[in-house]
Length: 143
Image (cartoon, rainbow, N blue to C red; front, top):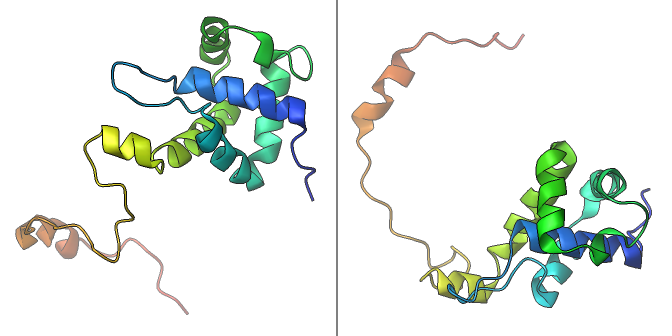
């Protein structure tokens, strides 16, 4: 089992999340380093913990080093070393960022889950699936 992230590692990740998705006064949205949003990111780290640790090790000079850098420096380091580990944090940050009611409201969306109310769907054109249905199977039959 992977050990939980240390407080210094969480500080580094919070700084990185804020560099990836900064707050915007113009749009009235918090950044991914907002206390509520980052708490969700940290709780959701789960299986990404090792990737997040590798990202911190790649970008920093020790625990807590990234948290002391300014956002522009963090952004530059992320761009220079972008890879699967940074992608793991980005996916995690996006997933939890767009669950925040403040963000959804700023986007003009109702802050609620998609179900049970559902969302209206446009009528689909069944003819669009005809080429897929006409295609020969590309899988091996089960034996």
